[in-house]
Length: 340
Image (cartoon, rainbow, N blue to C red; front, top):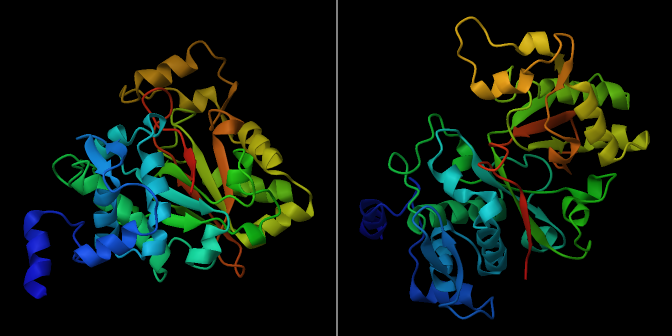
């Protein structure tokens, strides 16, 4: 068995960690959870446009350590990741550190044991660890996104091994993410978000909604860099249950939070002006144009480009911000798919 595992390393089909040998019995068990034919092509995986058949996806899900009942989730994840608007192609070769973050909603969370609560971004839960890892192995083995070859991220981040969380719907005062996107509360879905590593916001003092949302927003004001106003794409706020309760008690909706962030987190144009070294991009110069020095520029491109989910432990007034990748036509937009 040790030699077999070393063989996978030698073939370059791992993410740097040992993989589960994809025996015929294990792959067939995975295939037994779907009615799709094994040679059905779910997607073509950028940048090599490898044919992601149901069987090939099953092979990588086994290698990642998935249980067979996770397989419908992995199928939905691959379909969402390969949607052109998600732009997996750009993420695969960028020098940025973005990685697909999987957010699971609906009854599948409890049925499969997807962690939504304490340590939601951390280790200890097989579903989170292996579903996220399956996508990364598929990106490597079918898409060709190998580190140092196609994957040229300058820094990377740990989410490039596995990046999967569940929304803690039971602790949220709001409708969950998939319901916002038009799905029924009884549906199970995955949402793919192109995100950098989470940035923790530790706020044990704010007890009023405006104070707390301002704290969350100004903590995110340096995302990308302190002059990126608003030169990047979506931003994900992962609100901890204690912070969510504070906002819910004052009847703040998600829309209220987004609008407050958009209107409040702004800086005067003079603070964003290019420096004497001329290092700032032409996009920044175009953004400022002939704006008055005192005109306040929003950090976020629009309220609609702010995503909000509730997740994390119920003890401790913590939240997290996940900066998104690029916006605009060359960037990425979140994609939601139903789990069959």
